[in-house]
Length: 406
Image 1: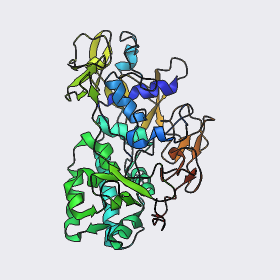
Image 2: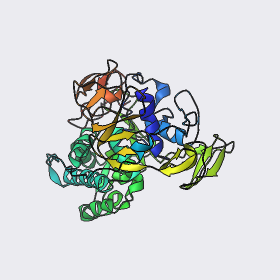
Image 3: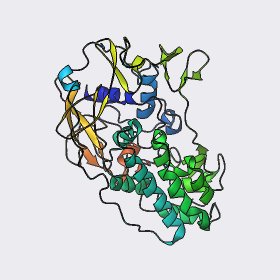
Image 4: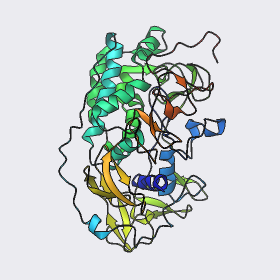
């Protein structure tokens, strides 16, 4: 029940692209006890229509399927307790900076890559209170800039950037590098997932300073080698090799003509783009009120963001502050208490309960991710890469392509 309703919480997002980052694609689907499948070819992260964040998109746009539930079966008249809804968030006095890992690379190329990751993580925290910032925290289990940088470095070995330049698989223009961090700080809060995944893919100044030279379907060892609009997917190849593939944002399509709806619309019944209702307008389903509203007693009402640890929360209206998870009570499966993400050895009932260093196992415990060793899913690996041989690809260093290639 907790897993199902944790997913319902993700109706906050109208369309979030869930690719992973500079090291690999969407390898952090964060499977929980009921979603711990292996990585078969028909579950390609590059085309994952059943992944967590793509489930969000499907739910918001009323697309149904075995892993794509909608919220329309929930009565809009009793989904929240008015007393909880009327409560106000407490003052946020937490340190959202945390302990930022020190630069441990060498040379200007690796310094540039490190600075780019730090700038992207700082931009994420600066968007505190925005829907996309909350979703990034929830999907990756991160609570501070320090968490975010450590999570990024595990998937983006710094020597991958310098090696790509040394092997003439990428170019670095140091004179253009300082502008990258500046432009990241100005980037919209509406595209934070992609910004953390690959700043070069969304910030032109970062592309201008560092650009890979490997094109579509070319063999790669990391995203650093691919042109900015591509990513190095290593989901189904052995060892360190991958293939540069398209990383453009997925469109959410609606209706028989399969066209995207406008930002202020939702896909009614999976067939028709329909305008989202405003606050106070009569409603029958959650989708009608848009990603920042919910249907309360037959009327669209706004969600409240920013509830602190120990405060009551629910999955429809009272949304926990950045870096906190709504620990839903087992009783009604709707209301709970805002709490920190759980660490190794602590129980979990959802893929969202565990922090970025752990994953929720089939036994319902947060277990540490490993740098190297056996794995069944990418979520078990620090790097986010579980090879076809069932081994975690080390996050501690970039890999050279084996002589035999793919």
